[in-house]
Length: 466
Image (cartoon, rainbow, N blue to C red; front, side, top):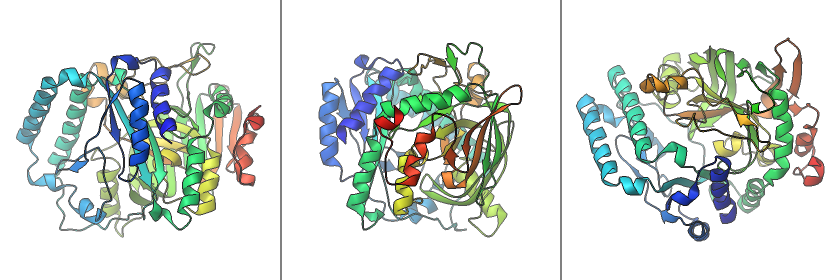
């Protein structure tokens, strides 16, 4: 477990062309109970020349500081008080907080420059939390919502001055907790198997998918079995297909486990409806979540959590849109980890899986910033040597003239599970089409092996790929 965790971190630097040797420390974040694994991870990081930085997660009225933590005894309490900053948030406070933050970073800028980035070990399997909306809770005014967005943007930009995005990396892995149910040990070992799948085996199949996607001008996604998704995602044009590609071949490095190809879509021409019948995002449940896009921006949204449409819209704006009036479609990806999906179906864990694994179990769509946020100008290459040129969209392109409008400081993945996925079709410039997935199954030549876990309890083997 520790070797997979730390090796993913190291490979992340190599694949991104970043120099790990200039860094001296790593920020380790984990859940109490995993100390034996973390101890091994610390030893591995020390062999890389990195000292661990481990601190306790804390929560204040503005937000939470990531670190190590234990159980949350009352999630409803935290939800009730998440906007207590409405009591004092004004421009004077915002400017004071930013001033103190800058002074702290300036004092410790030598240490900040040596931070390699976070290594995060998440947990999942706890009882799903469906919050109750209470009229007594404080709510940000419209003016305060804009200030909160401005504060988040300014804080993120400031941190990036001292811990440069183009020089740091990260890795994330997740494991289940006993609360997941009676077959905990069996599930735990199944997750270890999923987290340690041989990424080199998937690399070849995913390259087949990318080769087909690179032929398209847009991708059409449709739902089934009650899912009313009907969305067209516009792709970046390739000037030199021999040396360029649109999608990144994502294997098990920074995001463990293996299993996706992803891109930053062109916003103009990205239109339609994204729908999921049920999903958990950042530990909150959304029933019948529907987002409508026009030129890549959310123009309307709804869900079925509460009786009134007004409550549902407020719930989405606060927790998914993070008080923004709209968000762009920052990422489109095709998940390939059917082994994980089959395990989830076997144990009935659809409502317990972390987004880290769930995003690999079907196509997913991220609202907010792109995957290349604040490092769009850093060149990224796939294992085949081609440069991934789809690293920005029309919004993030504003970073050079209007940086305050270029980023949203959020990125939330929404996955359509295979059993709700009617089709994914790649449409070429001349109107001809390539079918990638039909009725929740891969049909593109060279990808059929990914259907193997649907038929029986199995994983994709090296012999299958060969």
